[in-house]
Image (tube, rainbow, N blue to C red):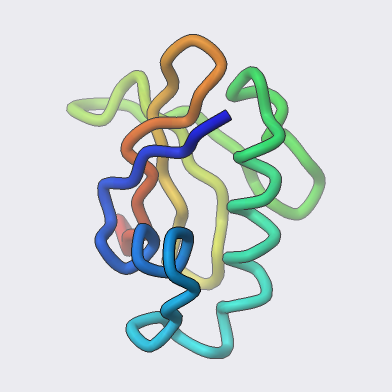
Length: 92
């Protein structure tokens, strides 16, 4: 699987290992979530205890989210067997 990123911060981290724009306290969880997304073949594969996986509604319908920390979520769309437009956002 190849992840496609909406977030430049996550893309830099994934492609170059550049974590300079990411919150150091969130880094381990970001690594775990990105690895799980990379292994997933369906959005529901992210329905893992502790991640609070859920589909989004409204204008974001068709996208999904998992909890990063507090109000922060990693959100993503899905095409075929790939997570697309992976983003990190505070959407609350």
